[in-house]
Image (tube, rainbow, N blue to C red):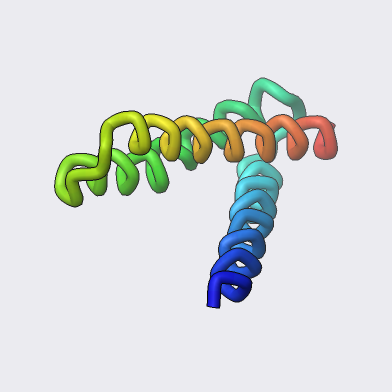
Length: 88
């Protein structure tokens, strides 16, 4: 049962990174700065809000909420950097 969850969550990570890269392409990003901007905006519009809201309402430990939030932001920023390099 856990194997399926691990595979699914890993696949979703790749899909998320691809979505950020496609969003950068759609936005006309031509460098790392633009990629970082698009990635930060995408992170702020999606996982940042959801993770912080869950942290408040589901009573998740603040350290776990912080770790998850930081992890999402870093994942999006790495995807933005990669897209910025690829699209430059």
